[in-house]
Image (cartoon, rainbow, N blue to C red):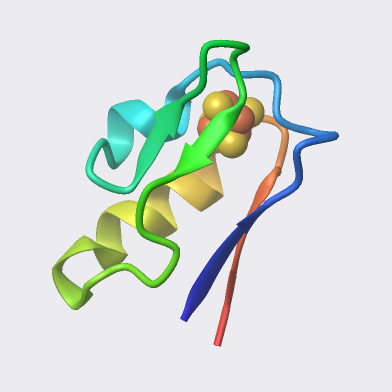
Amino acid sequence: MEIRANHELCEGNAVCVGLAPKVFDLSDDDQVVILQADPPEEQLDRVRKAIDRCPKAALSLHE
Ligand code: SF4
């Protein structure tokens, strides 16, 4: 699994950080930072929710 972020789309609203704070963070310039690109099993529900709810559709999960 690999989480990818499209930085041209991310607007730094931190929805993903709120849903999965162990996996996502924000940089000082308000861009998503992926802390665990290959997240552990127990984080996957949160990760999928964050991907679904990102208002800019900036996140994706690849097998
Ligand atoms: S929810 Fe989407 S737009 Fe918001 S910080 Fe995360 S990746 Fe960026």
